Length: 230
Image (cartoon, rainbow, N blue to C red; front, side, top):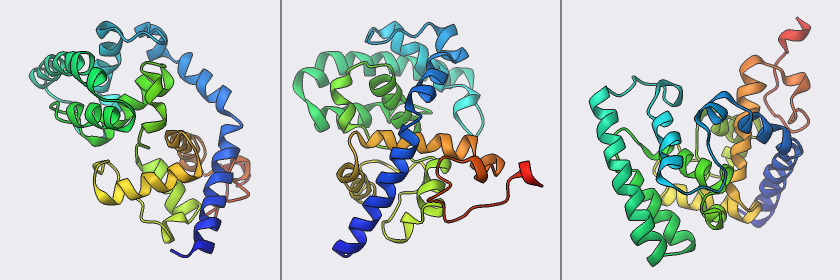
């Protein structure tokens, strides 16, 4: 990629993220006022096993996956493995490592838990560290989870995928392609995990063809006619 193309790519992605982050407060309020957050009683900044486990158990349910829900036995096994992971984080990882190495160790070990793949592992760490402010000193080292909405925005709506190879949904964060992509994002904006707010665009606007009122309307290369005007 030439330096001129890289500058243009960074400008487009940076501008798009800036437009979305103009709405950050209202997006965060939607999360913190959400039924799961309130009913589960998640406590900000609380790194206790009990607090983290509530969100982990939620991740084992149907709302977090497109495929079949794991069996009761698999979920019970995953919860037991979560307890081991939590002890490893508290007793080994956070005492031995820091910064990117600490985050990578957390990711590699939680990804080994049954039913938890790379995408769910990344989303769990994103929520605990970024949104719930648990071990928040690691937020600059979080990887951007790639889901279908985020990938669609980057590849199809902003056409950035023509210049930079975007990982597939659920691809291992430690693979070379994903590492190169995450480093590219890191040069554009810190923390790079905030590109995850693109998910809102896909979920709230693209899914309903609400292009006319979309926050990224001025940058989108794949607009469609809104149902509002048919």
